Amino acid sequence: MGLFDRIKGAASNAQQASRNADADVAAARAASGAPNVPGVAGMSAAEQQALIAQAMAQPVPTQAEADFRNTGGSADEAAFAPAANGVTWQQYATVIAQSQAVGYDPAALAGLAAGLGISGADWTAATEEFAARAQTNPAVGREMGRIAREGRA
View 1: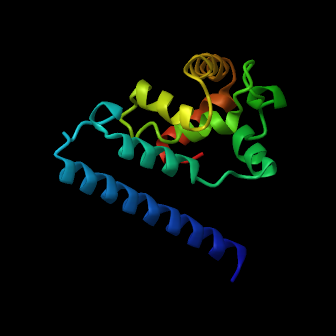
View 2 (view 1 turned 120 degrees about the vertical axis):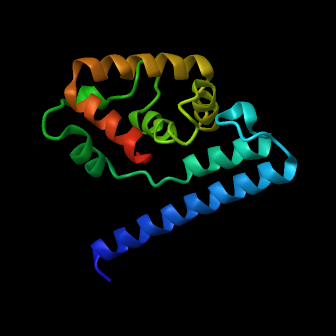
């Protein structure tokens, strides 16, 4: 099996796992009588944990892959360096990749970040820092947009 076939297979498996997780959350919500509300407000603790587990299960690209995809040949190394508080670009991207799935709910994103061991204050500071970078560096902005659109880091 060639490299492309393995990548396609892994992507297909990840999409199926995502669909299965969505179905599991919907079934759990229906069984518990919980309202069908986007974000953490309508989620049980088990559903929040399932969402965090799903985010953490996303494959992390190698640094070479990330550099190739992130920079588009125009960003310097500092653009994707960790935030001042130590939150890495990959941690940030992993959480942002789930933003659409949680209805762009900031509280849900903070919960996902907490699942990665990032405090609420550190998440807020890192979000502000990476957003500022996106406004001053087109490569960072493009990559943030791609991550949010595609739902994967």
